Length: 611
Image 1 (cartoon, rainbow, N blue to C red):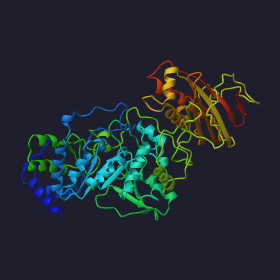
Image 2: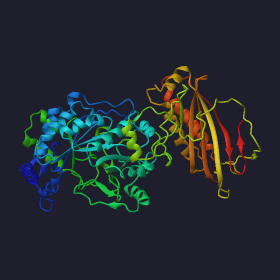
Image 3: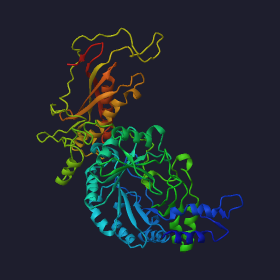
Image 4: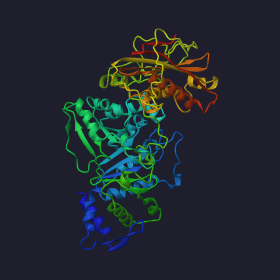
């Protein structure tokens, strides 16, 4: 049905034998032996028949570490952004020419005050079958009933982790529970499937793949795993990307019965389903198996530029032509020329150019990229136990979590009701003392029991050169080590940490996560350390009001031929450094000290315990 108006448009585009495109470059009729321009544009018909994305705003209410700096970014002046009327004018033009699906994006589209009115007016366009929105979900539960009445028919929600503490660390804002309420509200209102977009990055969240898929067992979700894509300046490298094949292999090991679903025409996703599950999973193979040849997406940015490819630097300003009084005929020629130049593969050797990711609503690692978030124990996939809980779920949400996800665990953190102290722990055993760390003692080091020592440095060879110790002949035993550190904050910084009022966020949570991650990366930080497969890492922090200090206690466990004291010391030291970084804007008079090994067990040299 849409082919006829598209054909008319193509005829108008090709009416002139010689014309100029928006860049000024001549576009002529094809010569003998060259591909037909008519055939080329005919091949592109799908682009103008299906799918248009419109960015409603550059603003966002989150500050994702991989997307933009904490202080935000320079925004385009309001006068240069598309007005509501201009958005509707362009939408009307595209729909008239055959587009039957429009997706509203950002920034974060749900922070635009007139988003409900825009959806309602788009819903009036004859021929438009689908109005979708891509959102971070923070405002979704509140606005969705109105949006549904206005005509919203599809929802994509961005969510990169199911761990509340990791969520807050990534986005630098609270709101995990709001996103989950938004997903629940969408299901409650009958949206099916509700698409959940998860950008998978190695060292960040690839350990949560199975947990995301498990959601589809009882919920009508389409969990879409997106390969991490490069952008200019994001220091992308192959090691950070988890490929579609690797993700699929992980899922098939857990669910061998995973079935591939038929691919829809122009689909960018490879869809799979586990028999008996309500939902499905999909993969967006942007890097490993690009889909440029069949992609039918067009994008209009918030400032009115037309992009035919996310990875291309070429943009055409429809805003400028609109404001210059261009006729519908002229606008169609401009759009047709841009679509005709769409490439068969990613521009710029696979690198997205021209605009940062926050303008395109896709991930962008900053130059000063943050450390990767630690993987959370598979025994506790949705909670970091022992970290203070600052949000309470409604009974309905609690029931939903319990019934559809996992059995209830202790809440995300504790504020002990009988104590003003705050505690932070990466793990809390059921029989553990609720005090995360006893008062830090300044007692001198005294070994308990025999401690055989070497009469030479083991990391130096006979010629005095640095060398890694060969542990190939050592027996595997259980190795446990505990280390501690103290950060003297001073009264001002201490009070802010105690009340969780630092502008950077929860210092104890961030330091705890950094300590866990540091333990896992010790062999990359300390040159001659062996890589150790840790079976357990625990980092606890406790406020010491008498000293205006934070005590840190880190323990590591592994089974192998070498000890884990360096992992425990690294965890304590990096947690202390992270506290300094979180508080340095308040005071530079912060002292890091008392970094020491408290105990070590296992190995040929015997045990060590500091009294």
